[in-house]
Image (cartoon, rainbow, N blue to C red; front, side):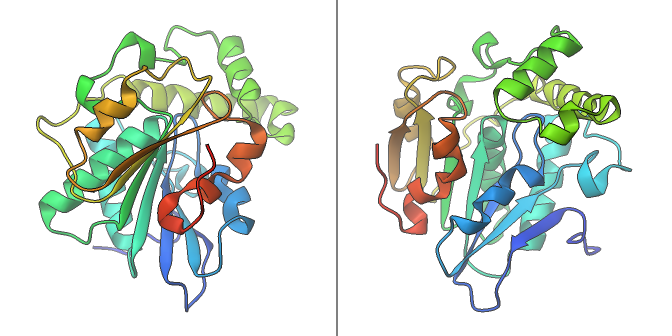
Length: 254
């Protein structure tokens, strides 16, 4: 396999004596840069790596993935190439489904599995894609998508003031929406690694029994922790989210 670390595996924090790596997969419309603020929130001994999907950031010259399977296969290759020590796999929203899919595929292939899987702000993938999950929507106007991204903190100030950068952000968001809308869960998919689910107390997207649904997909240890806020929690919680991840060693405060 050709090395892909330069543009696909983004090592946001790396030290030679780290005990583990926290590997993050992107959410809808997001990129590796979304996880940069977590560099200073992780404890000593934990590195931070983000996986960059095709069509953005350092991979902007590549075509976007055309469907869920193509993106999942790309993400599996990226995660496997990134692993050189024990790791925790994380995904938020659409990225939570991707993290579960990647972990299941890695286990099935006999590749090094994560020490833990953390899924954030997503319903259980086993129930399939429903209208509740299809937000933002392909039907949304550019103005509506830009408003959604700004509301949820996905638009940096320099992007808001640059029409060309806004157009790029919209292109990435629409590409991810198209991929998300082709999502399907492989029948019988489950994982043996410990699973932690995180959800916001005020997130209307998350079903009331989502925690119980996720527990059926975890053959090993499982826990569900709720945090203040909506789909991206509160700004304060999001900025320090790794502190609430049990596998990193922090005490989870609900």
